[in-house]
Image 1 (cartoon, one colour):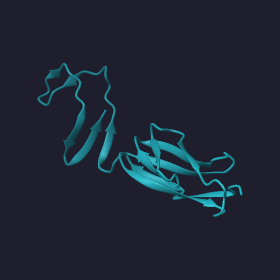
Image 2 (tube, rainbow, N blue to C red; image 1 turned 90 degrees about the vertical axis):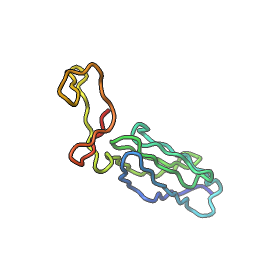
Image 3 (cartoon, one colour; image 1 turned 60 degrees about the horizontal axis):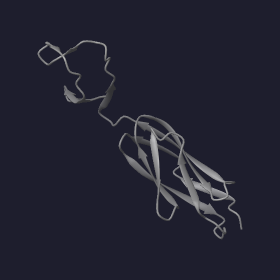
Image 4 (tube, helix red, strand yellow; image 1 turned 180 degrees about the vertical axis):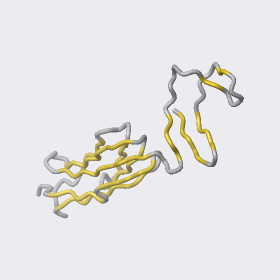
Length: 130
């Protein structure tokens, strides 16, 4: 008996960077001969998918801000379902991209010879520097 439908719960996800969520697939009909599933992400730089041992669920790991589509497909490749994943910066963080050609200054306003990376806290607001 072939798989006729796969339902994915939830069908959409919004996650902060570094967060994760579990997706659960329901294979129909209940008496399908082969209920094994294949999981994939169309953009692993945004969201990775790690199938559970039983293959019925998978953990979605938010890697970086952007959009990705997680697809679960029947073993025969004929039936699939998708989950749209949006990954956003963690709340309270703002992404700042440093211009590597611009001069850098230390906290006293003196020219600095090194590029600084890390998390800077300013007025209670977190900034993520990359």
